[in-house]
Image 1 (tube, helix red, strand yellow):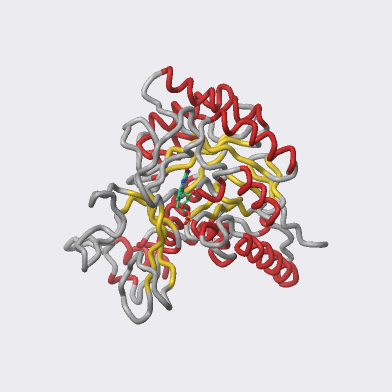
Image 2 (cartoon, rainbow, N blue to C red):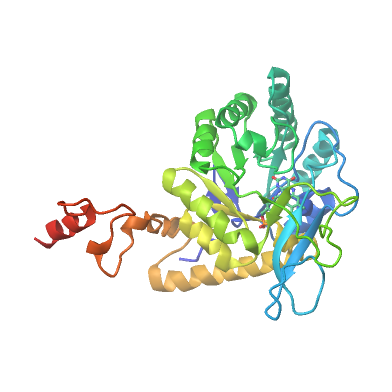
Length: 382
Ligand SMILES: Cc1cc2nc3c(=O)[nH]c(=O)nc-3n(C[C@H](O)[C@H](O)[C@H](O)COP(=O)(O)O)c2cc1C
């Protein structure tokens, strides 16, 4: 039996599980067409709103690098430096829904077998604004979008009822999801912010509202560094900076921790993983934790704006991985190994110590009684 690199995720068929996430690589028709030609299985459009937005003056995103010879993390370009992260304070698409609709139609007509998910965002403060979510959802699905991704995660919105401020409020998460589900005819994914105490709470609220999948992570709230020479932030306008979002290699372990929390809490639900992916080794960690698709931004931005080499490598390495494991383990597709390491993420107290009886779970031993761990060990021994 030949290996099968395709996946079915929330009822949508993908040629491969690799997507471009909602960001500059998917901000235009030409980028998305090029991305599909290059081999990406799907894209999530740059987040679409009802009204145009205006970005800050100057650069909207930059990349931080570090190196073996100096520990410096800096946006300054220099030789022998390795990518540390991306930092951005870019808002959603500066093109409104009317601009996007004919383009979604043309992209789907040209690439009917590729998956286009429309990322959408509106306010959530009152019924009129919930209606905006419905207007956006209907316009995108009527134009041919295969699914919707609700942006509950943009880290630089001042409004308390938008972006990651929705993702920080479980009531808003379920209310907005429910409003979109009322009118949607295609699957609805919710992209959550990683900037909450327990992402399982907000994911649960989205599922209560009817979400078909959770997407994680968007960028982590962060600041650029201050240049030791100029004493100014490395990216600023008139000396000022606001909180922005960190992506790329630096967030990979943190995004994986969020994903492990999610997939362990909801083992039967669907998850799309994002954060620090540039080749199969990172994508594999997300698959083994239970993700059914993965998405890429920073690595694609740095590779001809849409990642032709990144997707070539991902597709090749994925096929090689499947072929190797078909021979050794009889695996044919993602479903044969998805989630295989999910239950290896456990409580600290479940990790073996040199001597179990010494471990008190962080509590002082109670005089006169065996510690719970010790009592268990002795029971087990008998
Ligand atoms: C410049 C830039 C703009 C972005 N714009 C959006 C956006 O409009 N909507 C969204 O959901 N995420 C947006 N993101 C977040 C990415 O989709 C992705 O979640 C994040 O960068 C982490 O993935 P990475 O480590 O592969 O970069 C943006 C990221 C960057 C760097």
